[in-house]
Length: 501
Ligand code: NAI
Ligand code: MG
Image (cartoon, rainbow, N blue to C red; front, side, top):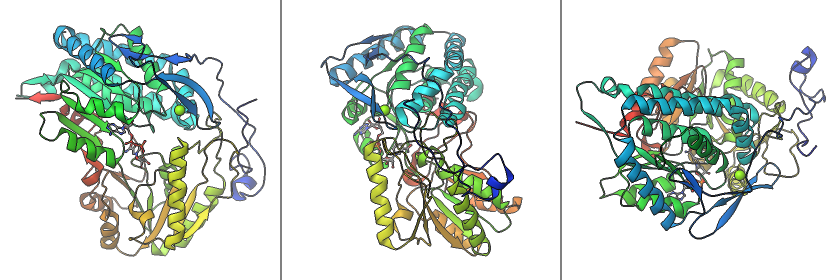
């Protein structure tokens, strides 16, 4: 079977002995999710004005499965003329149909899209894992259900905008240009499209070049849901296509999630125009463990925060701070748990850590691992096996790291965790806040008062307490400082898509 990649030699569940002795050497049998039900075209056009059309240049590019480097499909390369066509379709749909439609009718379309995502959830989850490399457990249990949940949530707001913003006159902005990254392709599309449509805007969305397939599947769903042509346009391409969207004169709003570098370029490009902008950029989240924390639970939270999904999460808990008195114990538990992680085939239900999204990203992570070693932090990696083909990286620690290390300051976006210790609350707050980012943080303690104290002093958009990476459509998400501005999710998520008078 082609999916049968070699997985870790270790297991962690099933018998008491195995739970205690991670080197017991027994295997899980492979349990790959079937691909038989997947329908992928050989070639995808651009979804403009309700149908798939050929790109004006006639150019296509390939997307691969990063777990085995196999080619999956060709997708169209949109150039300026195609961006123009997409914006024109969105503008016409906005003027003639979408802004005129009773809000409750808009809501009905969103509900329909949400239900169709649920109906096609298996196919979407498998394609997400094939195209981007994330474990099927995550795409099946997190990405796809949350994508549907966002459409359901914003469907409910469509005809209640006057209640969302009482005593204000609410109107849509017009055409929104939306550019999304490769770490949560379908979910980011849902985060962007659902609130925009609920508020009465039309959309031109561009997925990332390494993970275009679930966005194109969403285009099929949108077409099959009978959404009026032009309300949502989905075009594929790389940075240049993104820049054409950003610079287009007839776009009223840019919503971007991705690297801080590109975020800064976008900010410069829209300066002096009347385009509205929301940016969700990088992060370098602190995960802080106090001596009174439930340690086993905390270790599981650390693992989940940085290693699951290969650290490809902007809010990943990439900096660990442990109170000195429990540091040795936590590190021992952490290393033991890392030994039991299974790195391998993203489609296997046992897999904890899938493939790194692209060769470029793997090279970036390797470069940072080299930097960390040179800087003098103590390097540790799990001894788990990794497949010989595809882009994989073992879960890695840098122990005794210091504030000035680049691996502590810069976003790596891989399964690499820096570990530092602290003695007092004041010390850890200062260290945790000492980065250019401010997207999220985690606090582990038994004391409610300590949680509230930490939350008020951490410069982070989200602070999780005794858990990590928990999302809900009702809850706003976004950052401070170089992590961007604007909020997505919840009522706040609508604000980026409306004019209020
Ligand atoms: P990127 O920021 O280049 O790509 C994100 C999206 O922006 C893609 O759709 C891309 O095609 C588009 N884009 C690229 N250049 C553009 C431009 N000049 N104008 C408009 N759109 C443009 O991110 P990349 O290169 O894929 O990853 C580099 C690093 O960025 C990662 O290593 C990670 O540190 C960070 N990153 C952060 C993400 C987050 O969720 N905050 C997501 C992805 C990457
Ligand atoms: Mg791909």
